[in-house]
Length: 222
Ligand SMILES: [Zn+2]
Image (cartoon, rainbow, N blue to C red; front, side, top):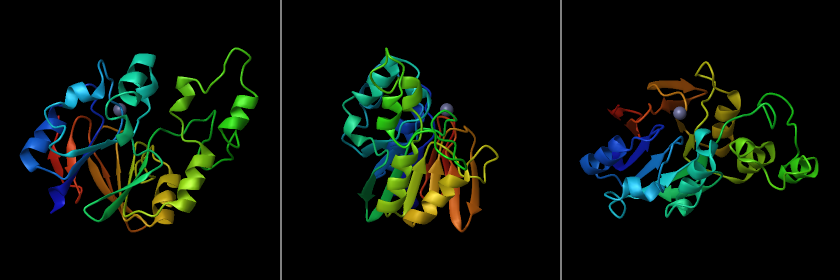
């Protein structure tokens, strides 16, 4: 049943296909891959499907562009369905999530991290700053990534960043999939649909405003 779980690419304010996909395919769950550009709380966009399917999400990079976009997501009624750095089980399939992107000022995969962890960053923060600012909160932090790599086991990895089969992707993503035992990666961020295989892992990019199924088949596109 490849349509049991549906993966939705960067909505950027348009959730029409998320809703259509749920009505059309009646999946057990939908997983949203980041970049929502919310102008109201997330649940307001998804009202017609809440209760008919499970809805999970990871943050992208643009969900930190403004305080309101951040709060409409992270303080939404669906805030607890954030699977960043977590693993959930749906129909016996374990799905791990990694939101955000690699950032030079925090950790660019393939090089040494700039900071051991968030405490380390806070120790050297500018004087007028008392928490990680939004523009850095969308980063993939090395210590969290490594912890996930060591502690999580999953069948599927969902990310915002791409693995290296995409020309802007990063090898660390397929390395993470391999370490946690995932045989499939679904990612967003790059907005166009493709399927590929890397190190025996099936990779699918869910396109902007579109939806793909467990086999990586394109169901809906904008
Ligand atoms: Zn995007």
